[in-house]
Amino acid sequence: MTAAAPPVLPAARPVLPTLLAVAHGTRDADGVASAEALVARVRLLRPDLRVERCFLDLVSPSLPEALARLTGEVVLVPLLLGAGYHVRVDIPEALAAAAHVRARVARALGPDALLADALADRLADAGWRTGDGPVVLAAAGSSDPGANADAAATASLLHDRLPGGHAVVPAYLCAAGPTPAEAVAALRAEGHSRVAVAPYLLSPGLFARRAARSGADLTSAPLGTHDALARLVTLRYDEARGLVPSSRPRIG
Image (cartoon, rainbow, N blue to C red; front, side, top):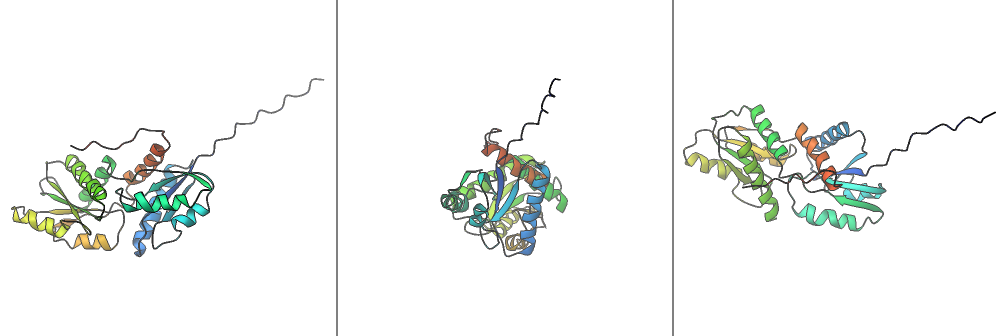
């Protein structure tokens, strides 16, 4: 009697690196909720991945705490719009103390055409229409010139994205100038009767409230959980793994 052939078992699926989303952190409960909701959308987009989150300041788990709970390969995706001090210093320092993981760090979210798409949608949601005049892009601002240059690059991308050829002026809510209020005032002095402010911010909070007090005719909402933002997080993960080419835009 011939023995039955052993069953053919399906090949084990490879374990993909964990996506660790690294948010800034805020005392504002709505801001924390917005970051959590964004990570939840990323999980829906990529059910094949283990997606965890942590915060650089003020909120738990911290980056060192999150790394201590992980093993194997990890891809850190900064939920940050520019490559400032956190990306250059804080994240590498935390990784240097976490030798038990094999980590790669994706680049910051901005600048990217997907962010320009999300900013344009937020402006439209707030009532901005072609012909409404120039837009002030209200970025958080940084003492790092590179981070501010990333915001200026996003202003250029948003200018290209909006119909009508309206000016998009970068401004900064701290650490650099002009402030959004100064940029709005300067545009009015040039004769523009309507000016909009587009917060280049991920979440509600102090900076978003400050942007809304800049004297503009309308202020859009922060980027929040826009679908383009969630897609961008997964894109940065794939870029860091070398699965897709970098989407870094060419400005100018």
